[in-house]
Image (cartoon, rainbow, N blue to C red; front, side):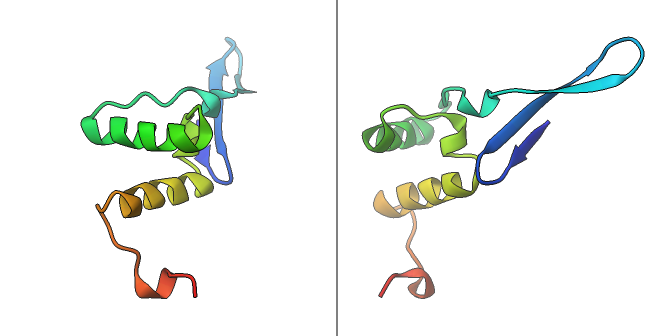
Length: 86
């Protein structure tokens, strides 16, 4: 089970032979493992900022901001006028 919000919540659903149970994990803190050149570039970008990059740095509310800033700062996207700070 995965739930992205202010952080990245992950839990394991298991069957004990009689009923289902849930066990919380710290899976969101797993190291980000890039699979493409673009993702490797994003990892390097975020490493400069944080040192270590977990999946939570990408798959959460704040993580979406990290992705946006990476795309904006590397020229792959533009910040719309309505979003620019005055």
